[in-house]
Picture 1 (cartoon, helix red, strand yellow):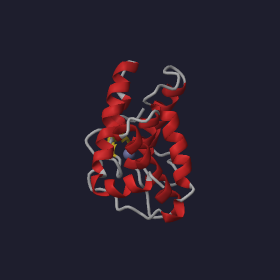
Picture 2 (spheres, protein in one colour):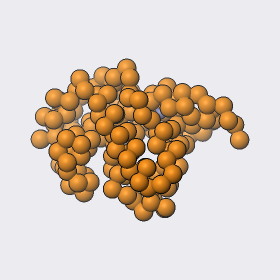
Picture 3 (spheres, helix red, strand yellow):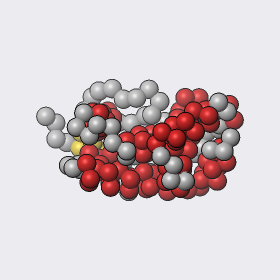
Picture 4 (cartoon, protein in one colour):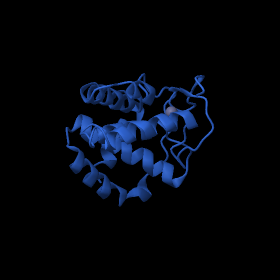
Length: 164
Ligand SMILES: [Zn+2]
């Protein structure tokens, strides 16, 4: 196993220096994508799809905005809307998903948001180190808050789009 770690060019997470796949438009280093894959696998198996799952998916997506193309533009915005509704409106995951479904009907109004220089202090690499569900839940929420704060210059727009 290759132990060398390199920072992901998008989120800065120290991740294994490996070759491999990454997502089509949520661009990341292959090592970062692999760590995220492990977290998701644990969500579905050991943790049985915990409440923090929605926040974790949103946090990862907004830390990997990719390039200004249609799918990436829509992805960043719907995941920022997800973070907004969960964190600021206290909406539960199922309702957030429904609200996002409604917002995507107006996705032709969405425009590329210039990503922040700094994606926040918590990354997938930190969250992957958690052991218990309790720890994971706590750090996953902190991750989501930090990723949402990183996009502060676009908060007003996200609030508006979330009401479409
Ligand atoms: Zn990354």
